[in-house]
Length: 306
Image (cartoon, rainbow, N blue to C red; front, side, top):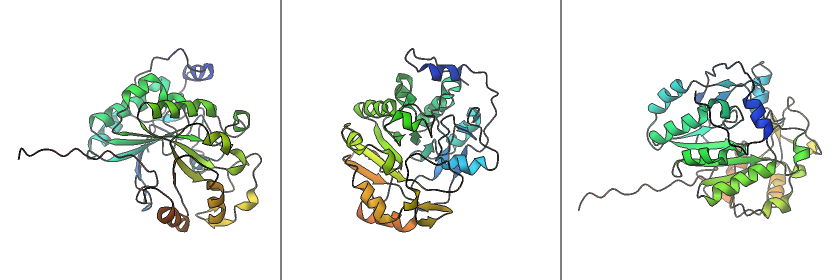
């Protein structure tokens, strides 16, 4: 695996982690297509698995894997780039995969292994689109910006709370201001990028500030609660009265009320509850066929010489 040369402006904590001697274990379940008719991009390609250094208290991957003792936040498994290559070579041009569907593909370990960067280069070569979901500002580092193809890359940077001290109590990601700077950098450079308020939790979000930052596009996903997640600060859990899919959710009217506080120009909602999904699709989302609202380039017509 290629080690990325570290930039001088990287946070000291990131550099320290990448210099740690880790026992690299292969992640074998890196490619999977989920059975979900409501998801337009159901195929995930995870360059890391079974752990994420951000170790967010609300993470669904963490509680799915943790109870089976398959969650190692300080030593994630790494996918084999040669096996990734074979999978990509079988995909048709124009296909779109999710990078970071289960664990963040830009966690600090990427600076040591470079497997996500190599995967992006392979996807570019075979003209396969990629939807990146990340909590890391690494996505806007110069060597990643240079690697990503503006026609193929679709980027969502997740933020839950603008108060860094509060966020530290339940997630290990870099401060929100660094992630927001990454969104604005990528937006300025013409990428299909959105801030992802995921999960959007009313008690943790500073709506006035998030609305004032000049961000053009936003994806929203509301919190789902089960008994294995940690308790988040300052939250009113009594509002989560709807039970679906082994989790508790907010009622639709409460979601609509909270969403009205977000004033970013373009907003789309991703949803797990079927009846709520139908509401957003029919009444709110700008692209009813795609809740991720990706900016897909229209193929250029090929002249037949006539």
